[in-house]
Length: 390
Image (cartoon, rainbow, N blue to C red; front, side, top):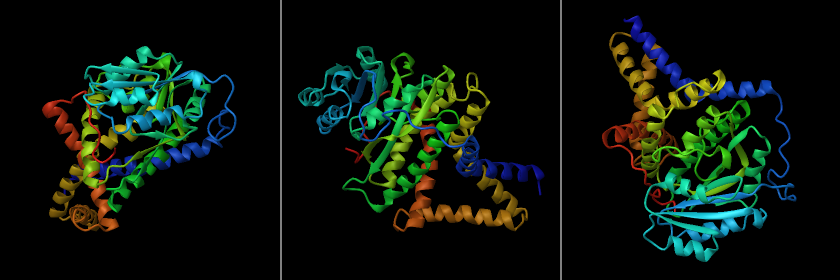
């Protein structure tokens, strides 16, 4: 039996276990050694009086053909518990061919930009140029913020080292959703716990598009195919800022109503992610410091390498078992086969163990398929709403 194959097999298994489980345990241990978290900044959530000297905020909503939800979104923004004189609501219409602009104006948006189709990032860039707030906050047209979410988000900037802050997204089931979609909530809950730990240790390694903000001076213009969710946090660190998670800043969105729909969403998302990973500077350690670089490798690089690692484990375990490997490797090969079979059955039989397997297999597959999409046809700067989320 080849010792090299054994090494490749066990290293690949170890890396999968590390990125999926071990990294979280290591972060928890580090946070435990750091001691209790300090008191939150004044005004960081709750229903108390606003903190004094609250900074001016421009809340930017990029929208493409969102006439069915934009009025509710603008109304939600105007109802936030934030001084109205210090809140500037901007709707950036990205090549809209429907009544999005009309509905946004009717709902009371302070500024509506009607822009040629250039993609979400360029619409946001155009809005930032028109922004008058010292903080620029961003949201999606279908994301509704809790009334005190903006106060909580802005409070993070009381720390002068913070350049970027993102809040917590909670997914609600749409009318079309089935119990199959609850697996995404399990995954997302785990991801948010990781984000909270990363924020304590150094900075988060990714954000989300539904609720986040930057200092106006820290805002960066990036490649239009590279979304802010992944490109902003690590670039903030490279520029000397911290990127933090604010769990008390809550937004809600409808979840994609099926595991298969979630696969399609993740596939599109990964076609925007891979350019950032491979040519956008994510893996370049300069400006990170050792701790954050290890966080990027553990949570991002290895997570995106998971499809390749699984393929290596499957192939090497097959070869090793054929060559007379021991019981442990045989059991691991059997488990891999069982997960794949359970995933296939989960498409027809809606039992929780099968759905968990299906969600995991499709989520990992979306990483690889997103890479294939990008390499084969590139990535468009434009975006479309995920099915069932409006």
